[in-house]
Image (cartoon, helix red, strand yellow):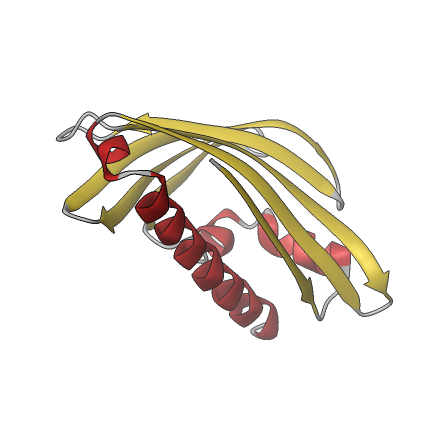
Length: 150
């Protein structure tokens, strides 16, 4: 499944980047993301993703690896994990791009490819896509709040 999100934020790319690489702050923007640990700065992280999708409650311990970045404009990473109870496997590859629109605005774009295998996949594309879109909308709201807090 592919997902795209693009929003214009009222900050410079450098300011948005500073929030993105502040692991506790950016983790607080991701719905259901808990216990985030930095293993190696801008290289490797661990986290637990908790979500309720349809009849399933998932708790997925995940490893996050940064594949590359260009500060303050681009980051590519991937994450994967397996829910212990349902054995559902989630993996995502995502790119984040920050582009200056003008002196005080940044286009924040995320492109993600999500793969789901196991019991959760039986729910079908529509339900999983709807949950992902809800999470993206909540992420946008939360990152705006983080940027306003500075």
